[in-house]
Image 1 (cartoon, rainbow, N blue to C red):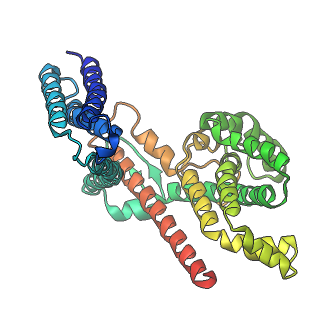
Image 2 (cartoon, helix red, strand yellow; image 1 turned 30 degrees about the horizontal axis):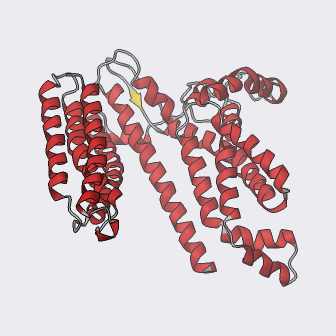
Image 3 (cartoon, helix red, strand yellow; image 1 turned 180 degrees about the vertical axis):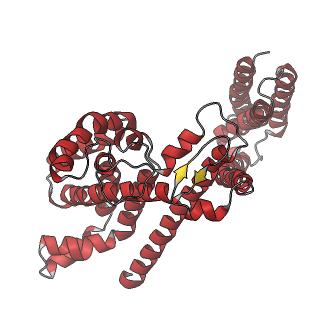
Length: 396
């Protein structure tokens, strides 16, 4: 029996259980719902949940463990569980049954399960990277990885897998991107929330947020075709800083444009959430509007603004397509922003692409690079938490 048929039958039984149980308790109460402990709809939902949830969990677990196996035995067992749940719900249906408590407990359990899935997924990602990273460091010296200044993977032996050139390119491009996105995004948020008229705000904010919906590959093509040649012809070649259209500056500028909506939209929402009473109090004491924004509104909105900047930084560190097309794939350490460089994420993709030996250090290095990115992002979160706590001690 196909799994889709089983799902349809289980859902049909759950729907039938809802209406049958609801009608049953109303009949048991003699048509007077005031005699029921819980509303009839709760009795119906209790039956639907008892019918559907065990069967659906069984099907989901089986498809996860054995996706290609025969599903007929599981389908039969799922239908048996659904029928048993429906029968149990009908047996328990009575005017005095606390159906609302049962439904709320079930929903609470589902919410806990959903939150646990997110936590367990994060733990699974971390442990998988730790395991593969351990495999890598058994084959390649850790000090050469963390302190090496040359990135030259060669399948078959003789690789130099120093992370410093990749880390430098990642931080350099991200710094330029944040230098573009944070001031522009923050000033745009301040203008839209404090100075713009409602009509202008209704037009400007959606237009800014359109940038967030553009695919990163389009930004990459924009960097490759337009921004890179423009920076090369207008700045790099006249100043004698390079002749390549692929550069750190190209990727950083385009990535900064992409990150503007992340900063502006979140900052705008946070600034608008500042109580109006704080503004009124500052204006009533004689502050100008600009002084109110600088000394009252922005300090009160600092935790949210820090979160927006952190989100933008994490997004910049994890970007790949813009870097591939805008900055190139050269692993080097250089202060010249018009030279081609690359990032950790680009090399993760390149090391896992193709028909390579998965047990080779040249492939396993991708997991060490991924774990390094995870630690960097965790460090950003810790720094942001410290800033927020320090702010709260000063202003609360």
